[in-house]
Image (cartoon, rainbow, N blue to C red; front, side):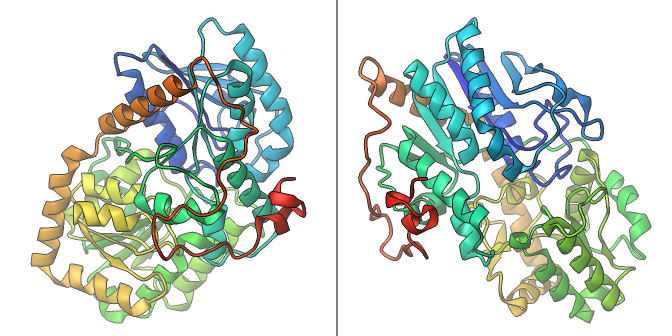
Length: 469
């Protein structure tokens, strides 16, 4: 079996990846890389190819202008598009989709091994993925990772770009042969909001594993952070997220800033991406400015660290330092599609506090290593922080649950589940491939009785019947 993943955005390269280097260099890249490596270890898999966009930017690394890169045995990255092209963020990629689609089709005609399955990550990747699947009569899988509808429902401004993204996502769901998501929340609430009839045979929940943390030790974490804090030996309240509004980092910072008792007991460290080279006026720059303003307004320079840059060893070291100091990891997002950082925390025995909106409900319900809170209640967050930091028995119980879960967090289960799904779809399409222009059942799948409807009609977005551009 030859599996082809498509993930166009961000700085996708063989590890080590500098996460947060750009706004689009996030958790989906870890997902794709780890999934590919785990799938390649399965006996029925001959090769896994990861397709991404080629670009040239010395600041981001010249490797991204290299057409072929080896990741592991039987795993490679193929970069398509023009050599010397500039880096583009997510919205900027849209105008290049026709060129990237043609480049992928051209490559497929020259490839020395047949492609058996296409797995697209995000709706932009589904465009070339669909074209390739149609040309070669093979199935297309789609994994959304994060959905525009949930961004909208979490308070994002309704703008043409977001509306267009939602239409693309609906189209990808409608036309894909299969959809893989990570949590029941995605399957039961997020996907049905798009009004796409996704049957049980088409939609699978397959939990991913956890990307392996680097070897950065707790001592390394202390060396990294001690220059930022007056008393670095205190318990660490740690958050790691991209500096975007939906991650709700200012909510965490304000909760900490308004609790003097908490400041005396624990330090706050927020790793909010790589802050060098932020574009003035961008969402990322605004979020960082807000965090700095909170730190300054409340006089928290000695106990609230907001490092401008970090490497993989720094991240791993801070996780381990937070666990050693009997601290806690916090994910306060307004809505979190999955919650990979909660699994990373579990791998080092670190208790967590997380939003009760989205994937963390499944994760904490399964692992039992944390507390769920409303992402709108500062009182709930403060109470949870005090319970864990002030309660050694509670901390130890949650940490023990985290350590016991580590053995279950490998990628082998994802690899086996995804390949079984691939084989099922391949057997269904073999010899009689269905037209992707055929309409699928419309309306909600009755997975939960309280699924909220779309806040607007998809037809109203594009201004055409059915929401199609």
